[in-house]
Length: 118
View 1 (cartoon, one colour):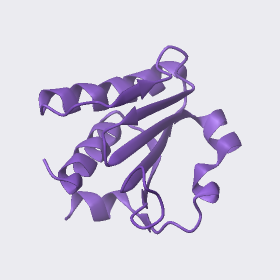
View 2: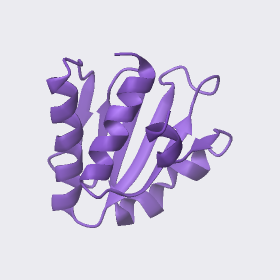
View 3: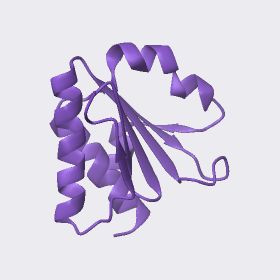
View 4: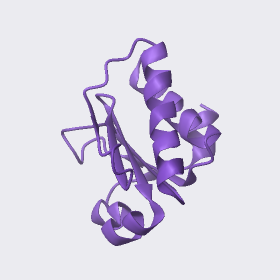
């Protein structure tokens, strides 16, 4: 799978579990650790966990190697490292507090529609 396929997989999985406000940051040329950040949130710990597990399960079904999965026990901020795509699944309150979109404000954003229609 190429990077765009991984991005599509992560966004579709999050969207299927009703993740809220999915934002994709194009980190190319901005960060050395990933080409894309996917940022989304759930409204409860259960939903955050369900979103994260769906992404993890789909990635494993496709034979992708998860480099890292952190935070699933608390389900307040789950980080899923899919090599060139890093997914941040927040609880709504944590997302507002950490505000990664502002922190990485120089990164161009993409919409779900842009990712799923390419």
